[in-house]
Amino acid sequence: MQNNNKKTQRVVIVGGGSSGWIAAAYLNGALNQRGEKPRVDITVIESPDIPRISVGEATIPAIQHVLSVIGLNEAEFLQQTDATFKQSIKYCNWVKKDNTFYHHPFSSMRVQPLDFAAQRWLASDRSIPFMETCSAQPIICEWGLAPKMMGEWRMGPPLTYAYHMDAQKFADYLRDFSKARGVRHIAANMTDVSLTAEGSVSSVNTDCAGEIEGDLFIDCTGFRAKLIEEQLQVGWDDCSQWLLCDRAVTMHLPYDRFYPGEVRPYTTATALSNGWVWDIPMQSRRSVGYVHSSAYISKQDAEAELRAYQGGDSSSQDVRFIDFKVGRRRQNWVNNVVAVGLSGGFIEPLESTGLYLSELGVVALAEYFPWQASSMQAMSERYNRVLQNRYYEILDFINMHYCLTQRDDTEFWREVRKPQRINPRLQQKLALWQHKPPTFHDFQDQCFGSPTAAATTLSGDARAPIDTAGLWNHESYQCILYGMHYDGSFSKGDQPPRVPKAIIQRLQMARQMLPPHAYWLQQKVGMANYATAHRPPGWV
Image (cartoon, rainbow, N blue to C red; front, side, top):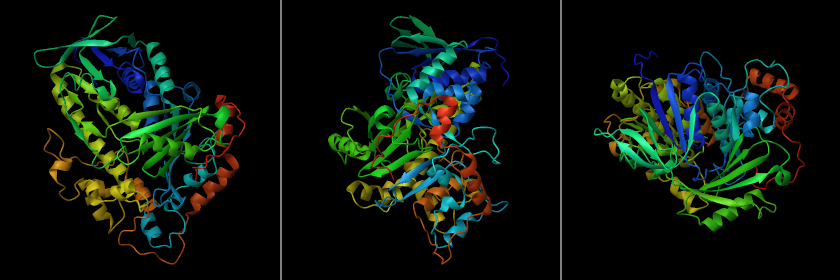
């Protein structure tokens, strides 16, 4: 992008944590060539007094682009952030409370040029899980294997993967990396904000660093939204009608006491009585958290259920409750303020989109960066459209996991199945997919009937949001639909599904060539060798 304005652009990021330092590191990488050719002055104002939420964070493959632009070395990243590999999400007890599961893997092997995998599976007796007929990764995950060989890769197309990591260590790593490449870090509390006559932010005042002026301000102050909401009065669209969970209880389980005997190369999402538990393995500990609805279960009972999932004596491990709200900022970018992270919106992390929304916010900002003040309006309008569309795409996808359940063992699971809990756009998709599997062109027209405007129209934009399949294409929708036993109008056949020869061959090679996940981490990045304690009884 050509910079026709000789004046150095000043970007001020208010708030640190994962979102603030992803913003600083990515913009420095994208706009300043990792600090080698600075065109933008980047400052992060981070409060030394606000505690950060330290949880294990699961990511999706989009993070590979972010780390590449920032310029991080993978081995160093793994060491500095306690990170492990993630190849899939394993969903346990989501269809019924019967210890069944299915995987949503990152790699698939579809027959080309025409893919009839879904049609073939639906016409079979369905005795093999759908994704095991499309991907070798579910079984590779169940075998506990790493997605990389000990030496040079010799298995054909590489396996797609993301990471599990310590979010706080990730923020600290990005902070040190960015500071060494020219990003300015100010440890101070914001005390006041100065606005122009037009309503833009001209500067923020701090308790120990004085006044900080800027041209563009990024609000990474979490749900407090100190700039976008408190100063600019940009409202919030509530989406809790479609997703009922509003609280999580979290716990860390260090391996020196609670090592389960393996490091699972995937994220586990296990449905409990009133929500679900994330189970994220890192190199030195696991992070577990029970995402639940406060309307259906008390804090005491939620904590007890989480501890029962872990089993053993976890009474010495503290838990932390985190309240959250599901919704989005009506506009992510207003005047010269951009909301990134929780200040811009939140959807529960069932598909690991927490960090992704922060990443998307800064990736799109680099693309639509306002090099001149005169371009601010045009850039912000397009930016807002991109962020709004993607938010609703994620909302549809997460909503689908709940509404397709067959569970009726608690009031919570009975409630999430009701038609009024399915957003209108998703209802239109499911109506179509009763008659055909999701396919590529379903996302080209990008309009599924005429949902009510009140439920889907973007505030300040008369156009209904569109699902571009930019994050999940038809293959991912097929994975969830058929993992959740959504049959539509299709009848089973009497023949078993066919597993393509290429998948069988890939599994044979994986058995011979891929090491156990923990062994790879021990040999390549120095993970400790822990004694096995016990397998959590909540594991499937």
